[in-house]
View 1 (cartoon, rainbow, N blue to C red):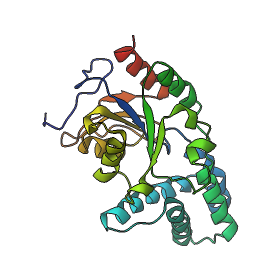
View 2: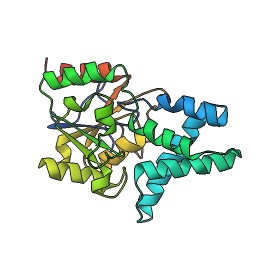
View 3: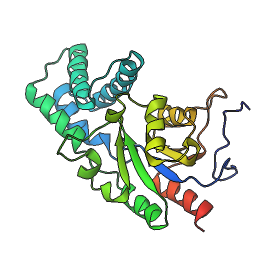
View 4: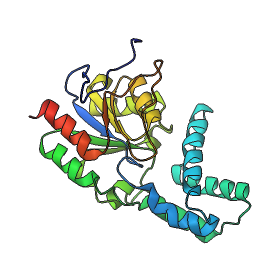
Length: 245
């Protein structure tokens, strides 16, 4: 096994490294539910599955912008990609549709399992922050606040401060530097392998929450998640049982 690979924790697994000083949570899809946007896509495209097509473009083009040395805000990018996907499908989108998309991106509800698991981790003494691609509007509320989860966290970090999207190493390093801990003391929790790989490549450990549509990528050339959890309660169980029982 290559030196940058990890053995997952959990049944039959072995954790490599000590207790993380900070749990760093992704927000979009990990904690809040993109499926809440489905009604908009069903109305505009006649098929709610187009939401996943748009979301795939959102991930791909956020990375493209960063790799190209450019930057565009998350919500502006989301609106532009809705226009692009509409052109691909030969349908029209109105200014009202674009406003509805941005409002939806800002106000997605939390997954049902998120708050109880986060409260358990907080109450058992874990230090927790978030790191997300979606910023708050100056003077406004963040998607995490709108989802009712902000009180679970010490701080909210956004890629807006680094002007680069995950999985750029600078984004993860920004969090470690701001918290004055080494990257190795941070455990990134995300529902996407591209995020866990990015975090591990920046020196973090990582936990993968396998939300529907997400799974580990079993390539020996890639670092594997230290923890693989089927949902947030499973993640909390593994962390509490390892370090708080």
